[in-house]
Image (tube, rainbow, N blue to C red; front, side, top):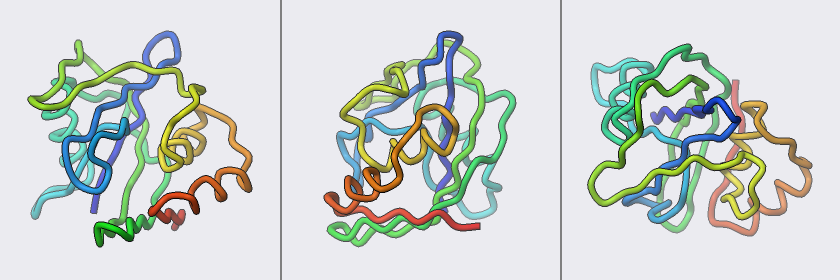
Length: 144
């Protein structure tokens, strides 16, 4: 299981982190990561947020859940998307980077576009988004 979070600042920009490894290495995605044994989703998300950005979370709320399959890396996960406010000044973990970006920017990975749309941060044409997702090695199905 994985938990990720869409954090928006006062001018509507969303916090993104550059992935250090795994099937999305180098991509700009929402902060978050895997849930360790004995952790709740919220505990894991708060830990990952501190590790990746040094920030705490406020106003955490569940948004969506996805089954994600990245075929080329044999990566499968149940991903839980949350929305929250980031508290503190972000700083990247070693080997990574962060940035605040407009959720309307072009060039985002289709998975990130889907998450931002589900969080109410951008509008997407579902058919166009499905076509863009099929052009990647990732499938993403909303569940529950």
